[in-house]
Length: 45
Length: 238
Image (cartoon, rainbow over all chains, first blue to last red; front, side, top):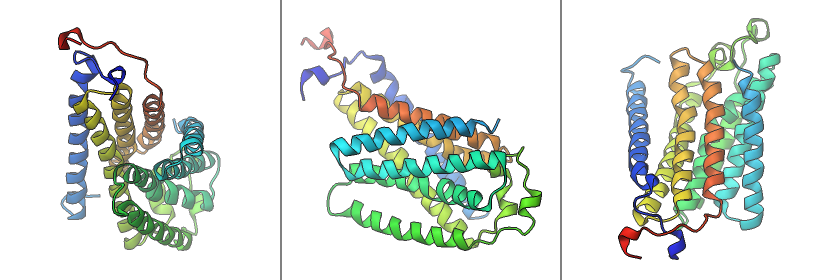
């Protein structure tokens, strides 16, 4: 991988990306739980 | 509020053209499936535009087929082609998706519309608040809708997050890192809106479709832009 494509470790993106991945993954997980619950009929449609 | 679907259609149309242009230049099944997915997205929001002005049973059916059933799955299938390149897994799943999509088309084509639909349809309200009373959906149709959306959302969002994670771990290509985050976030919005529709907040579906298209287009543009040379951190001693 050429160095020109490397990212400065202090770049703000390197700090924020894990949080964003975690946040979106958490929302996705909550959606899955809601979906499963609605299929099981635990929550009203 | 629901005139926002006009903006969604314009944004999605240009997004689709950009993806098909890239497919023409670089090939790759993932670009083709994303392009088809975006065509379905644009067709769905265009049906919303029609339903904003007048009632049409055909537009209602195409809106449900494209938007509620097929768009997410075809976009997600593009991501499957991008990430699962071994053993024909992606091709097998694409074949299954093709069969299921034809089944969905037949189910919706034969789905009966309410005899009083034209009289009771209110153009001042969004279609997402009215379709349940206008079109009969069998249990199998609802099952396929859930199946296709679950498959599409998890492959599209999950794939984008996974790609972002790979770039982050290697500390390379910040534009693709952020581009994938935007694509994941944009894809989440219409999916979340389904929950709002169930809660009776149908307007949010149209807004989230528009914001989702803008975010994904932004993410795609960012990820496919050539990155300028960045200086390395002095901390690494390079």
